[in-house]
Length: 424
Ligand SMILES: [Zn+2]
Image 1 (cartoon, rainbow, N blue to C red):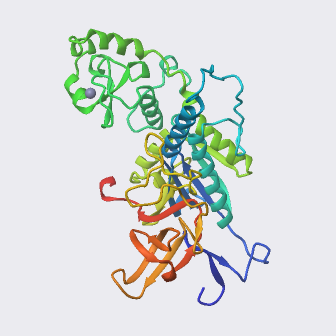
Image 2 (cartoon, helix red, strand yellow):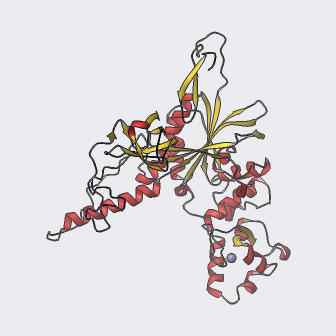
Image 3 (spheres, rainbow, N blue to C red):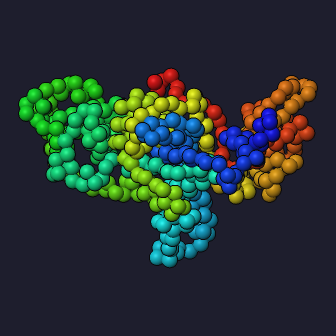
């Protein structure tokens, strides 16, 4: 850039563009990069990486996309309830209408998805497009399923074996986590580390087949020890019967669990990117093999076939989906009445989104020369018609001191360490 060979293309994420060469310049050859995606309900990890001939991956850019599915769902539920009330209040009874609705695929997808779910797919897609616009993407790796459905077609009957540390072992683990809903079968505890428990202990001749495996929290797993399940659950015959009946019952909706991921995969393929799919079991296996710490973006780096991971950036760009404002014109309380909020914002919002040339969500720099807020403030702006703006966490900055760095694009950006201490 100092030599004038490149200019800034975008500020966050920082992208530069060469001005003296392009793809048609003779002798210019670009290897391109690959993209790994680990889609999730709250986070989607994204990794841009290069792969050498031996299959070693080196990450050049990591991002953690934070979705707003729950916000969308809550907003739509609130809207639905208000409309329902408005429609039927002060009216005679009308039978509900139900057979005049059609669920069409929208946003270029090939299936109908609920708005909160669709948002996850389309935001991820838009980031694939963006990244591909900034660097030539030769391959997209998507973690399309939690576990290998081919291998797991009927694991209880097909006899897939669990073995600690093997790829099949990781697939079995993911399968069991989905089948038992991340819950201890003996005490129903959730959100704790779960061990794979042999219902008939291995020391008593129990096998490693899926039909002999359940998930148990560490205390239950240790309390049961090498006892048969009948002895351990002698006090709770109902639970014992339930566990036994569940052992040979295959997980029915394995395909449905992954419908969103498949919709994403097909949409990426439809855009013409060479797309390769992998499983969550494989990702975890890779991560363990190559001693990669747990982080959403690093999971994305470990999706698919690779032989080693050589490194990754120290920081990850956290990209939070913020939306682009609201259509709602009145602040309402929980009963639907217009109310001022505590900060004194008027009950009725302004119809314009742009005030003094700024829009909420713009990335700005404010240089305040005097007064209590003297100094430089950089961050997202929250606009007000009065011209007294919120910049980052500092409120009440006059618009005259503010300059825009980048326009609002529906996301908030933050640079965070790739590996935090409690994740190592
Ligand atoms: Zn337990």
